[in-house]
Amino acid sequence: MAEAIEFYLVKETYSKDQYGQLTASLSRRTLLGERESVTRAEWSAAGEHGLQAQWKINMFAPDYEGEKVLQMYEGTTLNTYGIYRTYREGDNLELYLEWKVGDSNGPGVEPEDDTTPVTPAEDDNGTESDG
View 1: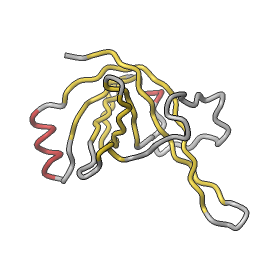
View 2 (view 1 turned 135 degrees about the vertical axis):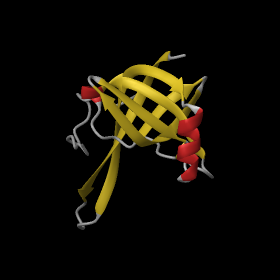
View 3 (view 1 turned 60 degrees about the vertical axis):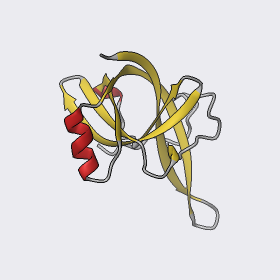
C-alpha cells in the first residue's frame, strides 16, 4: 500500500577551489511522491548484488535529475538512502532505495543544514543531470 510522503533528493556537485583541488558541495530539493515497500523478489535480487533494498518511491519522472541520494523523515529521524535503480513508465518514475550495509545512517550524506532543504531558487551551484 502506497503512502504519500515528502522527501529530499540530494545532489552533489564539484568545483575547483583556489588551489585547483575538487571540492564537493551538497544541495537538496523537496519533492512529493509515494513510498511503498519493495517486493520480496526485488529484495532478493538486490541482495544477490550486495544491496539492502528498503523502499520504492513513485514520483513524477520529469522532476528527477539523476540524483543518487534520497533523504526522508521516518518519524523524527532523517534517514539517508542510496538510489540503486530507477524504472520509468510514462510520467511515473520508480526510485529503488538501499540502506548501505554497515552504515548506521545509510550512505551518510548530510547537507549543510539538515532541517531546511535547499530549494532550486536558493541553489547557486548550477544543475547537473546524469540522465
